[in-house]
Image (cartoon, rainbow, N blue to C red; front, side, top):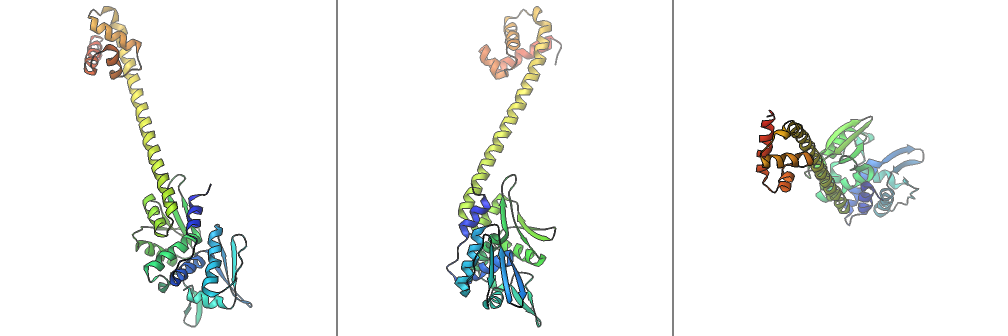
Length: 292
């Protein structure tokens, strides 16, 4: 059975109809799951990921946008060719710092200038490095190599009304969401609608189970209270039972001793009287025994 992360990624691992959105999507995939190598053979990009669909989508986008051929091997993809350097500038991954070429520390603004491209970019980030967990608590996270990039991702999500937090874990800068509602909103934003249904179904079942457990715990606590009160009443009744003369009190005393597990409602059914009448008679018996 697929986990919710794999389900979501398989659902959204498809190109867009718009070239600008595909550019944003490929930029995010490489920026979040790729590495760049410079050698005498030229510039190369290597993309790795736990999800095969994301790697296959990267190869498809490279072919679609740049005509480059790359063959995925399991969950790895090597992208080589004369077009790679130009591609990295087009995607906003490389830039010039004076006369020096370097990697963008954050998100290059022109890649996410429109709303549709921003959504595609977030989709690419999730495909490249995102995960969702619902085993104990709700948790979605994406890990990045720089603080600037993590802050830009938080700001991009905030622009869509999704509040994400940021922390450092070892050498990674982690953007995360812990609210099931916010996770649902994010998955819906990037088009993972089936995953949203799965998440919401899990949330409903968890809420039902929690409510059931609360009811069971409440019922057990009430049962314990009934037994505790009943035993105290029976001990008092035993001390005075032989001296009782009122038939109604005798009948109530016998009913209580024979049914220690019953609540006042249960005794009322046995005696064919009201609950208030049972409480009154037991109160009289406790008073006769010198108990409050």
